[in-house]
Image 1 (tube, rainbow, N blue to C red):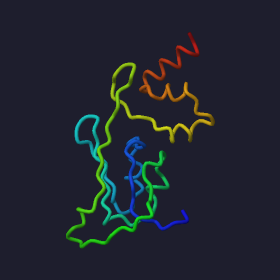
Image 2: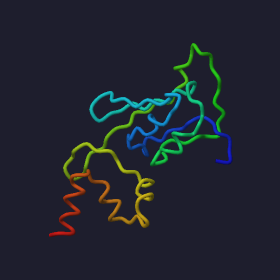
Image 3: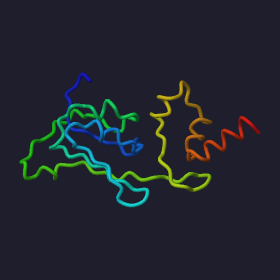
Image 4: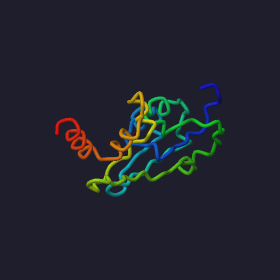
Length: 140
C-alpha cells in the first residue's frame, strides 16, 4: 500500500464469516459473534486497532480494507465507542432454501481463471446443492 494506513473499513457483502481477521489481529480489535441463527455481528474497535494491516492482508475476499481516512484518537474511557458494527446475514439457497453464506465474486476470481455465468450461477447454490448439480452434470 502506497498510501497512509488509516481507519479500517468493512464491506459486509464481501464477508464470508471465515473469522481469519479475528485470529490474525494481534490487538484483538475485531470480534464476530452469533447474535441469532444465521445472523452475526461484526465489530471493529478502532481505539484498540494498531493499524498493522494483518486483517486486510489475510482477508480472502477483500471485505476489510485500510482507508486513507485518519483515525481520530479518543480517551481510554471511550475506547469501545469508536467502532464499526455491521450485521452479516446468511442468504437462502435458491434451490433448497437452506441458509448459506454468499460467495462473493472477488473470491471466485481468486479461484477461477475465467469466471463465467455458469460458475457464478453454481456458486449461488449452497454446498450441498452445488455438489448435486455438479454430479448430475458430470455423471448423469
